[in-house]
Length: 260
Image (cartoon, rainbow, N blue to C red):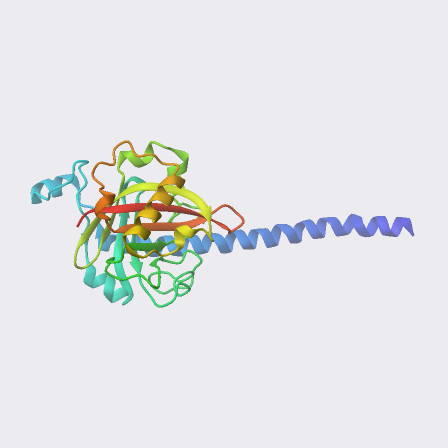
């Protein structure tokens, strides 16, 4: 009897191992194809959000900022034609993040749906469903997935890997059909999804208290923040993405409006 049992397991183990390899390979292939489809889509959209070449910008005499940054050339009509929920383009040059953003009535709408409305776990960069589409709120939350290949908001975590990175170009640009908004990054940190950083605030005192809290949590200490006058209570942008493997932590990046 023992001999038969031994033979059974002798033949069973290779079968199980082969099954595991097949399942793992299938899952890997599925994930790879998801990443590729999303990557191909967003790469094709980059043509509608072009970075001017240095020579072309010089020829057009397009003014750049103190760091030499030249604004993107954006085809708003084409982006709206692709998706009527298009709200703006976000550009974080130092992280090479450049995506169209959407605004809808439910934060679940684009969690796993791309800008071209294809089902994909990469989803889309989207504004909080309660946010004003023109970024006129005191604090506008923007969400995106922390993709393993660095796409979407996957590169935000690079700030944690290199504390000098943000100071190389500490700005977030947001382009709406009406205006270009420039935000100075002043705080970033990891927090739980239940953090009061996600809570709204009311009035000047509420604003001041919120700024105090998120600055105290920051692992980033800007070398020079003189261009931001929090006494004038500039509008804020807050970026949020998942952090860690337990899905309970978030990485947040906050910026203050310095130019529009």
